[in-house]
Image (cartoon, rainbow, N blue to C red; front, side):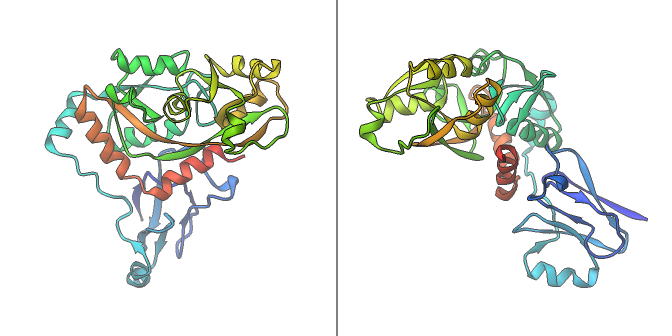
Length: 317
Protein backbone atom coordinates (compact mmCIF):
# COMPACT_ATOMS: atom_id res chain seq x y z
CA UNK A 1 0.00 0.00 0.00
CA UNK A 2 1.20 3.55 0.66
CA UNK A 3 3.55 4.95 3.26
CA UNK A 4 2.61 8.35 4.72
CA UNK A 5 5.21 10.90 5.78
CA UNK A 6 4.07 14.22 7.33
CA UNK A 7 5.66 17.40 6.01
CA UNK A 8 4.66 20.60 7.78
CA UNK A 9 7.08 23.25 6.59
CA UNK A 10 6.61 23.29 2.82
CA UNK A 11 4.01 24.64 0.43
CA UNK A 12 3.38 21.71 -1.89
CA UNK A 13 0.77 20.11 -4.06
CA UNK A 14 0.60 16.33 -4.24
CA UNK A 15 0.41 14.50 -7.55
CA UNK A 16 -0.63 10.87 -7.20
CA UNK A 17 1.52 8.77 -9.50
CA UNK A 18 3.33 5.58 -8.71
CA UNK A 19 6.80 6.35 -10.04
CA UNK A 20 9.15 9.28 -10.17
CA UNK A 21 8.39 12.62 -8.56
CA UNK A 22 4.94 12.77 -6.98
CA UNK A 23 5.25 15.92 -4.92
CA UNK A 24 6.69 19.32 -5.66
CA UNK A 25 6.66 22.93 -4.53
CA UNK A 26 5.77 25.59 -7.10
CA UNK A 27 6.09 29.02 -5.51
CA UNK A 28 5.66 31.02 -8.73
CA UNK A 29 2.30 29.60 -9.79
CA UNK A 30 -0.54 30.84 -7.56
CA UNK A 31 -2.71 27.97 -8.73
CA UNK A 32 -0.24 25.47 -7.33
CA UNK A 33 0.34 26.86 -3.87
CA UNK A 34 -1.63 27.11 -0.65
CA UNK A 35 -2.68 30.55 0.51
CA UNK A 36 -1.64 29.69 4.05
CA UNK A 37 0.13 26.77 5.62
CA UNK A 38 -2.26 23.92 6.24
CA UNK A 39 -1.64 20.39 7.55
CA UNK A 40 -0.98 17.99 4.70
CA UNK A 41 0.95 14.88 3.91
CA UNK A 42 3.23 13.74 1.15
CA UNK A 43 2.18 10.24 0.10
CA UNK A 44 4.75 7.97 -1.49
CA UNK A 45 4.15 4.62 -3.14
CA UNK A 46 5.45 1.80 -0.97
CA UNK A 47 8.30 1.14 -3.43
CA UNK A 48 9.50 4.77 -3.32
CA UNK A 49 11.34 6.83 -0.70
CA UNK A 50 10.80 10.45 0.27
CA UNK A 51 13.67 12.93 -0.06
CA UNK A 52 13.84 16.70 0.41
CA UNK A 53 16.03 19.08 -1.57
CA UNK A 54 17.86 20.96 1.18
CA UNK A 55 18.56 23.94 -1.09
CA UNK A 56 15.12 24.53 -2.61
CA UNK A 57 12.77 22.78 -0.19
CA UNK A 58 11.32 20.59 -2.96
CA UNK A 59 10.09 17.18 -1.75
CA UNK A 60 10.01 14.16 -4.05
CA UNK A 61 9.25 10.46 -3.96
CA UNK A 62 12.02 8.66 -5.81
CA UNK A 63 13.16 5.17 -6.72
CA UNK A 64 15.52 3.74 -4.08
CA UNK A 65 18.14 3.23 -6.78
CA UNK A 66 18.44 7.00 -7.25
CA UNK A 67 18.47 7.85 -3.52
CA UNK A 68 22.26 7.86 -3.04
CA UNK A 69 22.90 9.94 -6.13
CA UNK A 70 20.33 12.54 -5.09
CA UNK A 71 21.72 12.80 -1.56
CA UNK A 72 25.14 13.49 -3.08
CA UNK A 73 23.53 16.31 -5.10
CA UNK A 74 22.06 18.02 -2.04
CA UNK A 75 18.93 16.06 -1.24
CA UNK A 76 18.28 14.97 2.34
CA UNK A 77 16.69 11.81 3.66
CA UNK A 78 15.35 13.65 6.72
CA UNK A 79 12.68 16.13 5.57
CA UNK A 80 12.46 18.07 8.83
CA UNK A 81 15.12 19.43 11.20
CA UNK A 82 14.98 17.98 14.69
CA UNK A 83 13.33 19.98 17.46
CA UNK A 84 15.63 19.30 20.40
CA UNK A 85 13.57 20.27 23.43
CA UNK A 86 14.96 19.59 26.88
CA UNK A 87 13.06 17.69 29.55
CA UNK A 88 12.41 21.00 31.31
CA UNK A 89 11.00 22.53 28.12
CA UNK A 90 8.79 19.52 27.46
CA UNK A 91 7.55 19.70 31.04
CA UNK A 92 6.78 23.40 30.65
CA UNK A 93 4.69 22.67 27.54
CA UNK A 94 2.85 19.90 29.38
CA UNK A 95 2.05 22.31 32.20
CA UNK A 96 1.15 25.16 29.84
CA UNK A 97 -0.80 23.62 26.95
CA UNK A 98 -2.06 26.98 25.72
CA UNK A 99 -0.64 30.49 25.33
CA UNK A 100 -2.18 33.73 24.12
CA UNK A 101 -1.07 35.77 21.13
CA UNK A 102 -1.88 39.43 20.53
CA UNK A 103 -1.50 40.98 17.11
CA UNK A 104 -1.93 44.08 14.99
CA UNK A 105 -5.48 44.07 13.58
CA UNK A 106 -4.71 46.71 10.93
CA UNK A 107 -1.43 45.92 9.16
CA UNK A 108 -2.68 44.07 6.07
CA UNK A 109 -1.59 41.99 4.28
CA UNK A 110 1.25 41.28 6.72
CA UNK A 111 -0.85 40.99 9.87
CA UNK A 112 -4.53 41.77 10.28
CA UNK A 113 -7.91 40.61 11.51
CA UNK A 114 -10.30 39.26 8.88
CA UNK A 115 -14.07 39.62 8.71
CA UNK A 116 -14.48 36.54 10.90
CA UNK A 117 -12.30 37.94 13.68
CA UNK A 118 -9.28 35.75 12.94
CA UNK A 119 -5.63 36.74 12.73
CA UNK A 120 -4.35 36.50 9.17
CA UNK A 121 -1.02 37.04 7.43
CA UNK A 122 2.48 36.03 8.38
CA UNK A 123 1.72 35.62 12.08
CA UNK A 124 -1.09 33.17 11.36
CA UNK A 125 1.28 30.96 9.40
CA UNK A 126 3.85 30.87 12.20
CA UNK A 127 1.05 30.22 14.66
CA UNK A 128 0.04 27.13 12.69
CA UNK A 129 3.62 25.83 12.52
CA UNK A 130 4.21 26.29 16.26
CA UNK A 131 0.91 24.67 17.22
CA UNK A 132 1.66 21.64 15.06
CA UNK A 133 5.32 21.27 15.99
CA UNK A 134 5.05 22.04 19.70
CA UNK A 135 1.64 20.56 20.37
CA UNK A 136 0.35 23.72 22.03
CA UNK A 137 -2.80 25.76 21.52
CA UNK A 138 -2.18 29.40 20.63
CA UNK A 139 -5.26 31.43 21.50
CA UNK A 140 -5.73 34.71 19.64
CA UNK A 141 -6.61 37.85 21.58
CA UNK A 142 -8.49 40.45 19.56
CA UNK A 143 -7.42 43.98 20.41
CA UNK A 144 -8.43 47.26 18.72
CA UNK A 145 -4.92 48.45 17.82
CA UNK A 146 -1.21 47.64 17.76
CA UNK A 147 -0.72 49.74 20.89
CA UNK A 148 -3.23 47.51 22.66
CA UNK A 149 -1.39 44.39 21.45
CA UNK A 150 1.80 45.63 23.09
CA UNK A 151 -0.16 46.51 26.23
CA UNK A 152 -1.68 43.00 26.34
CA UNK A 153 1.79 41.50 26.74
CA UNK A 154 2.84 44.06 29.33
CA UNK A 155 -0.26 43.33 31.40
CA UNK A 156 0.08 39.56 31.09
CA UNK A 157 -3.00 38.97 28.94
CA UNK A 158 -0.82 37.68 26.07
CA UNK A 159 2.53 35.91 26.13
CA UNK A 160 3.62 36.16 22.48
CA UNK A 161 3.64 38.51 19.49
CA UNK A 162 4.42 36.96 16.12
CA UNK A 163 6.11 39.88 14.40
CA UNK A 164 7.54 43.12 15.67
CA UNK A 165 10.69 45.19 15.50
CA UNK A 166 13.10 45.37 18.41
CA UNK A 167 13.20 48.64 20.33
CA UNK A 168 14.85 49.36 23.71
CA UNK A 169 11.53 49.96 25.47
CA UNK A 170 10.09 46.68 24.17
CA UNK A 171 13.20 44.88 25.36
CA UNK A 172 12.17 45.66 28.93
CA UNK A 173 9.24 43.23 28.80
CA UNK A 174 9.95 41.06 25.74
CA UNK A 175 12.57 38.56 24.60
CA UNK A 176 13.14 38.44 20.85
CA UNK A 177 13.94 35.66 18.43
CA UNK A 178 16.20 36.23 15.47
CA UNK A 179 14.37 38.15 12.71
CA UNK A 180 12.28 36.05 10.34
CA UNK A 181 11.28 38.86 7.95
CA UNK A 182 12.77 42.21 6.90
CA UNK A 183 10.91 45.07 5.20
CA UNK A 184 11.93 48.65 4.33
CA UNK A 185 10.00 51.64 5.61
CA UNK A 186 8.81 53.71 2.65
CA UNK A 187 7.68 57.31 2.29
CA UNK A 188 4.17 57.15 0.82
CA UNK A 189 2.67 60.11 -1.03
CA UNK A 190 -0.48 60.93 -3.00
CA UNK A 191 1.47 62.57 -5.83
CA UNK A 192 4.31 61.07 -7.81
CA UNK A 193 7.65 62.28 -6.50
CA UNK A 194 11.03 60.94 -5.47
CA UNK A 195 12.40 61.82 -2.07
CA UNK A 196 14.75 58.91 -1.43
CA UNK A 197 17.21 59.30 1.41
CA UNK A 198 17.82 63.01 0.83
CA UNK A 199 18.38 64.20 4.40
CA UNK A 200 17.87 67.86 3.55
CA UNK A 201 14.56 67.17 1.85
CA UNK A 202 13.19 64.79 4.49
CA UNK A 203 14.03 67.26 7.24
CA UNK A 204 11.84 69.82 5.49
CA UNK A 205 8.88 67.43 5.45
CA UNK A 206 6.32 66.39 8.04
CA UNK A 207 5.44 62.71 8.13
CA UNK A 208 2.51 60.69 9.39
CA UNK A 209 3.25 57.57 11.42
CA UNK A 210 1.07 55.02 13.19
CA UNK A 211 1.31 55.15 16.97
CA UNK A 212 3.81 52.73 18.53
CA UNK A 213 5.17 51.44 15.23
CA UNK A 214 8.89 50.71 15.36
CA UNK A 215 9.74 53.53 12.96
CA UNK A 216 8.82 56.15 15.57
CA UNK A 217 11.49 54.92 17.99
CA UNK A 218 14.02 54.70 15.17
CA UNK A 219 13.34 58.30 14.11
CA UNK A 220 13.62 59.53 17.70
CA UNK A 221 16.99 57.84 18.10
CA UNK A 222 18.51 58.24 14.64
CA UNK A 223 16.76 61.12 12.88
CA UNK A 224 15.58 63.41 15.70
CA UNK A 225 15.33 66.39 13.34
CA UNK A 226 12.70 64.64 11.21
CA UNK A 227 9.20 65.83 12.12
CA UNK A 228 6.35 63.36 12.38
CA UNK A 229 2.79 63.29 13.66
CA UNK A 230 1.58 60.07 15.26
CA UNK A 231 -1.91 58.82 14.34
CA UNK A 232 -3.78 56.00 16.01
CA UNK A 233 -4.79 54.31 12.73
CA UNK A 234 -4.36 54.42 8.97
CA UNK A 235 -7.71 56.10 8.37
CA UNK A 236 -6.59 59.15 10.35
CA UNK A 237 -3.13 59.11 8.76
CA UNK A 238 -4.45 59.02 5.21
CA UNK A 239 -7.04 61.69 6.01
CA UNK A 240 -4.21 63.96 7.22
CA UNK A 241 -2.23 63.19 4.09
CA UNK A 242 -5.21 64.04 1.87
CA UNK A 243 -5.81 67.29 3.78
CA UNK A 244 -2.19 68.34 3.34
CA UNK A 245 -1.49 68.28 7.07
CA UNK A 246 1.47 65.98 6.41
CA UNK A 247 3.65 65.48 3.36
CA UNK A 248 3.97 61.69 3.45
CA UNK A 249 3.12 58.59 5.43
CA UNK A 250 5.93 56.33 6.61
CA UNK A 251 4.78 52.76 6.10
CA UNK A 252 6.02 49.53 4.52
CA UNK A 253 4.92 49.59 0.90
CA UNK A 254 2.70 46.45 0.78
CA UNK A 255 0.70 47.74 3.75
CA UNK A 256 0.47 51.23 2.28
CA UNK A 257 -0.97 49.94 -0.99
CA UNK A 258 -3.42 47.62 0.71
CA UNK A 259 -4.75 50.11 3.24
CA UNK A 260 -4.91 52.97 0.73
CA UNK A 261 -7.11 50.90 -1.56
CA UNK A 262 -9.36 49.83 1.31
CA UNK A 263 -9.78 53.49 2.30
CA UNK A 264 -10.72 54.61 -1.23
CA UNK A 265 -7.38 55.99 -2.41
CA UNK A 266 -6.96 54.61 -5.92
CA UNK A 267 -3.35 55.69 -6.35
CA UNK A 268 -0.49 56.14 -3.91
CA UNK A 269 3.22 56.40 -4.63
CA UNK A 270 6.39 55.05 -3.09
CA UNK A 271 8.64 58.11 -2.82
CA UNK A 272 11.58 56.04 -1.58
CA UNK A 273 12.96 54.54 1.60
CA UNK A 274 13.32 56.59 4.75
CA UNK A 275 16.64 54.80 5.19
CA UNK A 276 15.66 52.07 7.61
CA UNK A 277 14.41 48.47 7.37
CA UNK A 278 12.31 46.89 10.08
CA UNK A 279 13.56 43.46 11.13
CA UNK A 280 10.55 41.50 12.34
CA UNK A 281 11.07 39.00 15.15
CA UNK A 282 8.81 37.00 17.42
CA UNK A 283 8.50 38.49 20.89
CA UNK A 284 7.80 36.46 24.02
CA UNK A 285 7.09 37.68 27.53
CA UNK A 286 10.38 38.23 29.35
CA UNK A 287 8.67 37.00 32.52
CA UNK A 288 8.50 33.53 30.89
CA UNK A 289 12.07 32.82 29.72
CA UNK A 290 11.29 29.14 29.08
CA UNK A 291 8.77 30.13 26.42
CA UNK A 292 11.41 32.22 24.73
CA UNK A 293 13.87 29.32 24.44
CA UNK A 294 11.13 27.02 23.12
CA UNK A 295 10.05 29.49 20.43
CA UNK A 296 13.70 30.10 19.50
CA UNK A 297 14.08 26.39 18.78
CA UNK A 298 10.77 26.16 16.93
CA UNK A 299 11.68 29.07 14.68
CA UNK A 300 15.20 27.75 14.09
CA UNK A 301 13.61 24.53 12.83
CA UNK A 302 12.00 26.40 9.91
CA UNK A 303 14.45 26.67 6.98
CA UNK A 304 15.32 30.20 5.87
CA UNK A 305 13.99 29.41 2.41
CA UNK A 306 10.57 28.62 3.86
CA UNK A 307 10.56 31.81 5.93
CA UNK A 308 11.31 33.79 2.79
CA UNK A 309 8.47 32.07 0.95
CA UNK A 310 6.06 32.89 3.77
CA UNK A 311 6.95 36.57 3.43
CA UNK A 312 6.98 36.59 -0.36
CA UNK A 313 3.62 34.89 -0.78
CA UNK A 314 2.08 37.24 1.78
CA UNK A 315 3.20 40.51 0.19
CA UNK A 316 3.04 39.43 -3.45
CA UNK A 317 0.80 41.65 -5.60
